[in-house]
Length: 422
Ligand SMILES: Nc1ncnc2c1ncn2[C@@H]1O[C@H](COP(=O)(O)OS(=O)(=O)O)[C@@H](OP(=O)(O)O)[C@H]1O
Image (tube, rainbow, N blue to C red; front, side, top):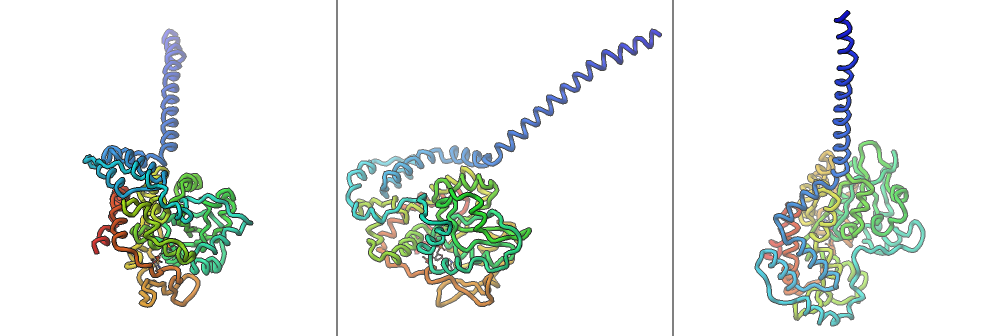
């Protein structure tokens, strides 16, 4: 009896305490892990960027100061070669005596006559007209080839369902974005809209349903794509694309910023032959060597500046850089890397390209919608006007520190400085 009463004390009192402590500790542990995993999933998208930024801040302690100078100089609308030299020198700790910003202020009014042609980046202007106004705008601004393509659209049958793009070619203008997209469209697992939708810069207010509706239908396993090169220099684009889908893959075709600027100018000149010469537009004051970085043709080429905004939202692993130069000399090689990045089978290979001597560029042997070989149109691969070699040299010098910064950010050397020496 005594035995039974003592065991009943044991079973009724002691285990209850133990049971309570046990339950409490389980609950606390569960709560702790729940909070941790919730915190991690919230932090994850930006974590790599913080790591990256921390690295930058420790390795490049003056990067932030450099960028601030860059922003303030460009927002004032002018940018001297000397300022770049000075800030670059400061980066290495050497110092520089000339107060260029003050000098720049004094000469700022000199070339107001050319202001009309200097356009702001990241146009947010609305397109007047109905839903299809984007296409009208596209027809005005794009090349013949793009127009042809927009009329053709996606000629393969429209099976499946329309999806928002999982991968976007976000830039750069005149980098070779059309050549890349057309080569990708050869791939059976890629479906892309022919026109540039300009959703994240000019048409954002139209909403995601409008955007999705522009896309061709896809079957299971196919990737939906689009290209709009102006996204790269649109301030709101990184945030907007991230909020659409944080796992969107981004592709940027980059090209020597000097050649890119000349290509950009050549395009404008073809539409408006009355514009001043490249040499006039490139400088605020040529005698003082003050380069006008507010001119969009030049500002687009400061890749490091624009890339920084993207890296606030996307880890580097989600951004693929294509060399515009290599895309011309070795299209299959660049395509192999792009297909790998997109998780596609390497289907587009050297068998799909041939070099067209008349065009001076690689062409597709068998595009998506035809069995005939096809080159891009006349507006791709235009003859550039001859630019004063001294201006080219000054521009190379201007871009050099930004290129170096870009190589460091991307971990890739695009070797544009070698072209300078040729
Ligand atoms: N295969 C092939 N055929 C023709 N052109 C080619 C090709 N690959 C790259 N390129 C280069 O692409 C440049 C035009 O770049 P984009 O297509 O990005 O221009 S745009 O921003 O869409 O207007 C274009 O620039 P320009 O030579 O200045 O016209 C070409 O140099």
